Amino acid sequence: MADAQTALGHQLAGAGGEGGLEGNSRAAAEHFKQHSRFSDASFGAGEIVRSSLKIVKYGIYDRAELKTWHQGRVVLIGDAAHPTSPHLVQGANQAYEDVDLLVELLEKHNPAAEAP
Image (cartoon, rainbow, N blue to C red; front, side):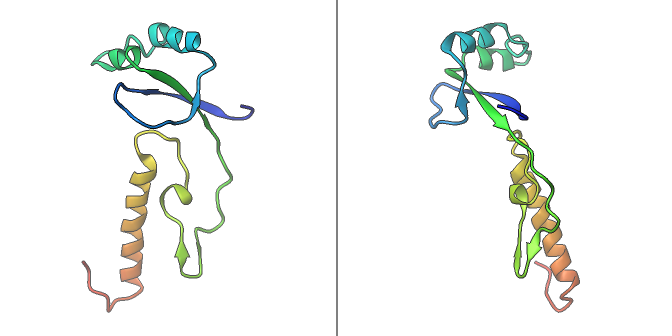
């Protein structure tokens, strides 16, 4: 993947679904599970990596910032407005922050509206 960063993930036993791009080979995945810096992580994280059923590799791409996040009566929030890497549910967190600010601005520009 040219001009892209990569993120590695894992699929736990019993977890359904597919995601990302599978690693280059089973041997490479096994090597990662046993010898990566993550395999020795403390507080149980190393065991999660070592017992993963599959190691997946995701491409992470950036895009130019939008000049505006709204047009007419439509506004973009969360990942659509400011995409982020697929970690720690940051897109969802940003969506909540965006909605909170949107409500604040709507109330400010419509003083007759009652606060929830």
